[in-house]
Image 1: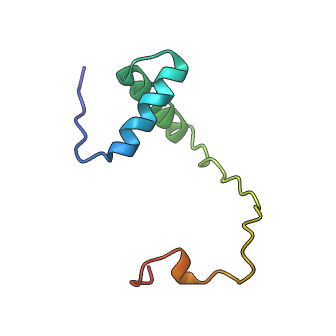
Image 2: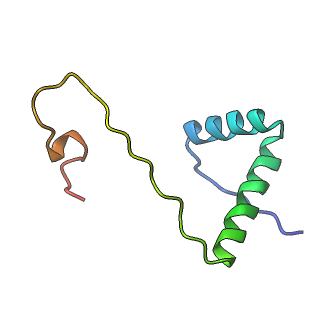
Length: 76
């Protein structure tokens, strides 16, 4: 069976995958294999990406937000 090697994965991402694997009672390898299988199945079926669920929160902030609050100066 082919193997994959993924480099430069942020530590936060690895930690999140470990937590998810623990919640599902699986090893990290099993968790990643399940995620890849689900991704491949969705892609093969032409499934739409999951929709974002947005929630409105109260921040206590009275002034409005501007682009600089969310993005760097490169305006991408």
